[in-house]
Length: 485
Image (cartoon, one colour):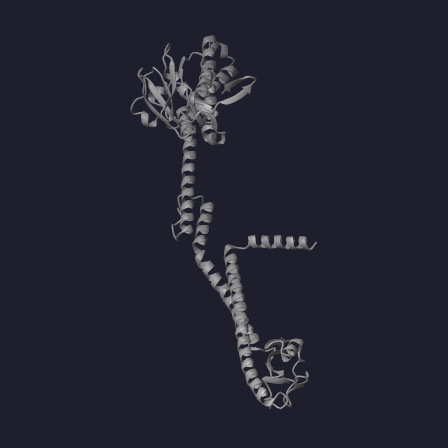
């Protein structure tokens, strides 16, 4: 039960501590550190002072005992003249051989002779130091062998000793130090956290105004400066992201405007003619077929554009699991999909097994876009050539066509979103395919370039970091070894 209560109390204390501000925590830590330091210093000082006073008192008692013992040996224990009691301070006593004692007249009684002191008087040992705390005031007594008995010199250890007064003074000083430490900790925390306060205010201002162009002033040093620079880098990344989103929205609106306008006009024409009842007379069968085909093509173009916009906007290349895969298998799968989408396309594959570490769906999407792009430009009877080989530490994929090629003025922008050369505006497509290719290749640490192929068309080359193929798995059967990869 007590253990559970203690645990509950610790949890409450931990919750309270987590709710405190950093300034309060620093103040509490500073005050606690000073309090602990003062307490330890007080204990050490008291121990040292007590030890020093003890040694001094013992030396004084020892010296007085030797003087009294010398006089007792000369005059005898029973006849030695005992010094009169001064009213305070030192107390003396003589222990006779028969165990009786002598004390000066008027002196307060010392504690009874202890068993150990009796043995000193009997000659069992030479001297003895004792402390007696049985009375209201304690005594420190030194017993020294003298003649056939012993002499004792004692001193009263009062409750209001210098040690107690010193401890009280040190305690008061310690309390003042703790209060001063708390004030100093508060001041240091306020001064040290001033850059954090300004940083917080700037971050709140950015959150309220949505102004990502307002960089936070670089001030302070060390960790504060690194934190401010990190936040400024984050703001710059957010600015770039917002700019990319704005451009994507503007480009998407521009690209959607033309097919939507054409689709709307064709649909409105059909609706108007149908309402007038002149659809059959105004549009012959051949014209209706051509119009419906145009509508189907425009819907397909919008569907493809929406799908590519979704792929581009999601940016989910990094969400797919990375695998060790043979890039040749990915190229074959992409070529199969390209043939199913465009049955008339001719694809010539020249592949070598090359292993890479990548995301299969993203890589297949990039290869498919390369083949689709080449298929749009390849004239009838000319194939799209796809080659894969290992070159040094890279996997090199080349896709070329026998089309007119890419003009030199268009090469720098061929991978831009929605960019389409003048000669390509009459062809189907959204201008996003090669942009997706570059995004996928960049995510895999590769590089994509464009050049002119030997057949006069465009040659798109992808370089990806190659990986070591997986080690063969050996299965042991009865009497033979079979390597299976």
